[in-house]
Image (cartoon, rainbow, N blue to C red):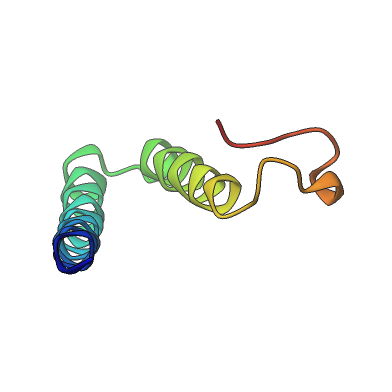
Amino acid sequence: MDAFANGLDFFADLYARNKVAFGEQLTDLDGRLHDHRTTVMARRFVDFHEKMYTQAYDDYDMAGDYAV
């Protein structure tokens, strides 16, 4: 059980660090492109999938959509 908890902590931390880095990279890209449409689309894509993967596969309120 300790190994599972340690792995969970490790991957939760890794996810959090990568999420911050992704946000920083998108902000940098905004500055380079002088146009935020591409980064808004990327943020929305990631946000959508974050929301989907928080749902149970058998959550019928999602109107048939589910995370694999």
